Amino acid sequence: MVAGALHLEEVSTPVGTVQLAAGPAGLAWVRLPGASLPSQIVVAGSSGREPVADPEGLAREAAGQVEEYFAGTRREFDLPLDLGGLSEFQRAVLAAAAQIPYGETASYREMAIAAGSPGAVRAAGTAMGANPVPLLIPCHRVIRSDGSPGLYGGGEPLKLWLLDFEAGGISPAGAESPRVARSG
Image (cartoon, rainbow, N blue to C red):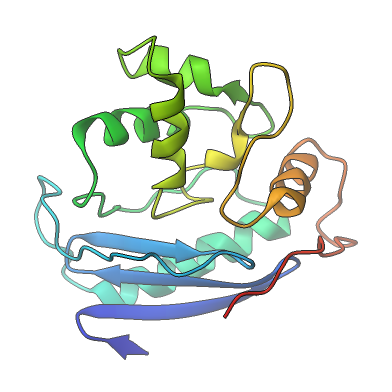
């Protein structure tokens, strides 16, 4: 499906339908069940690399990688991302989040420190909320310093489900969907 310059794909997963959109600068956004569409979509941002030759193929590849993730056969995503609409600080925080290993967590404070601004813990949380490609940049792995989950665009039940799934508490074959609020 094509929407303007974006090529859209949908993937049926154990948690519901995941939507992905790719444009000329890379994967522009991922919408998880229970999350609203981005209020502002910036396409073809300054990604600092050559334009994607086949955004439609990229959207299909991203959908395939998401299917592999939920099948338990993929732990990292290897896709060009369009983060052009984000500030330098937001990109630094998201780059730090992208380094959190599968099955592990880190705190918002650790993300602020990794981004070079140790006092910007709340801003790091705001950067997580601005993540246009959740799951691909695993902001669900970022939690509060006290160990509580913190906020998540797809809702706390989905965040907890993803963390439990990655920790091995949910098998891909027997995965039950978390109760997520559907938006529409």
